[in-house]
Length: 241
Image (cartoon, rainbow, N blue to C red):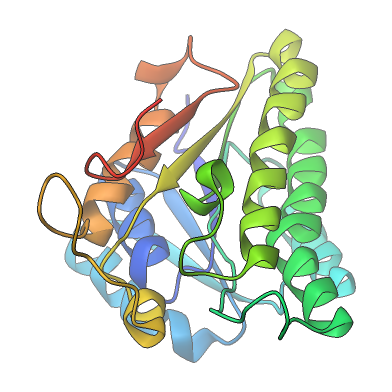
């Protein structure tokens, strides 16, 4: 295969940044989807330092018109897409009594609706080549419920897991795998801003973004070609099936 084209959303920092750098170091051309190119600049520097190649794509993922325009641009420029990593998401720690209707709608829109449409657009590019890797970033909150993050966040991430399985069933005949990675507490700017505690984890610490990225990049690799519809937990033992 020629150099793979990989799209990573929320690539401006944290897990998305680590995923983008690792994919690029492995040889992929990584497209960095962020609200502004300035946010992706540090990630692009990391990619270049690793000897990889990347491009910044400014896109507000909460706006489906911009998402469609971004996918049209990818189609026009590259004519294909081999890897999609749906990493972008939002979160907060509001209680059930604090969540407003607008906040609920915005959380579900960014964390669930946009990944669905990105997957649908990606499948349209992947099916003709009979190859593709889609990895969705869920959360431990989507599996066990929200201990610290809001119930709307947990609902969006639980929905993403169900969406992953549905897409995996529909895409399998075309040689496309769709999987999810479900982190527990990770040492990211979002988790630090929300004050998510790291005590009580059996392994004794939060995950690094790179540790989560290793799982994502494995599922995006050809080594995981016979794995689809799977949720890979990266939580240090916080949640065991």
